[in-house]
Length: 334
Image 1 (spheres, rainbow, N blue to C red):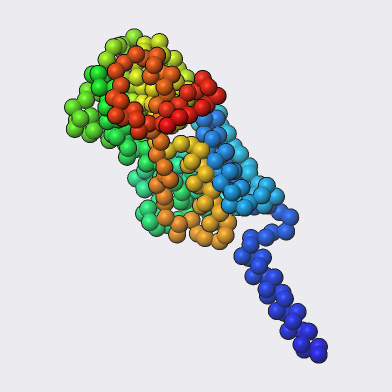
Image 2: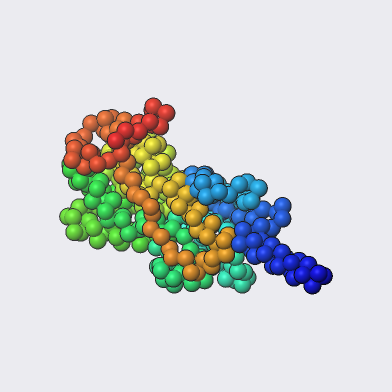
């Protein structure tokens, strides 16, 4: 009889251990997830991440976030990365390129191994973050937002949307590798399209020059960079006063007043990244999880800006756009 109960006890312990490992139960202690963002604009990614994990069945008791927001301060993001690594979270989610690259550099230097999910950045293989898109290897995986690769398409859509455009001022960031890659894609597309472009390195001097030089029949194309994201309101003011069309990457840029945007939204990138977080929390290794392209690309046109510009618009292209009316509490129509 004692032998029977002994084996029953051992079986119960074994099953409990398996359930413990499978469900990721760690008593009352939640899984610690660090989140790195360079600036407030990327908070929508975090909102999407939270929503995605909630939809996947995770509660606040199971996952605790430590969010580091550098408010567009590069020196601060470095300090915050050091702080986060000292806290030793179970997993880190990065909300953009500069956050991911700086984190990898510091992890490599200190030989730290923590799984990392990047919630949207361009060209991760070209930047050396992963070995291959299907089998990333190492500690990093996530969403390739494809923004560098579609820079040429963005130029094509801008000049097709407003056929009267004679020259496009391309705002890029020479300090950001992805922005430089995007500029090369844009140059190639401009050559094929026969479109004149004028690159402008992101800075106050760049905007000052545009205020003085941009004129009728010209337009602005924005390339990836957190610095350019932080200049969105100034670029919007410029385009409104000069009455020139501009194309951005993200829906929030169109919502703030640019004529159009073409790319995956911050929210959707964060939401999509939640699946990677869930898989890693279930025991999967990041290096074995293929990097994904965005679940969707949005072509957004601000109807209020379109009407204010008073320029001829390609109606065929307009029909496939998502029209937004930011003045009506974010209302949208197809």
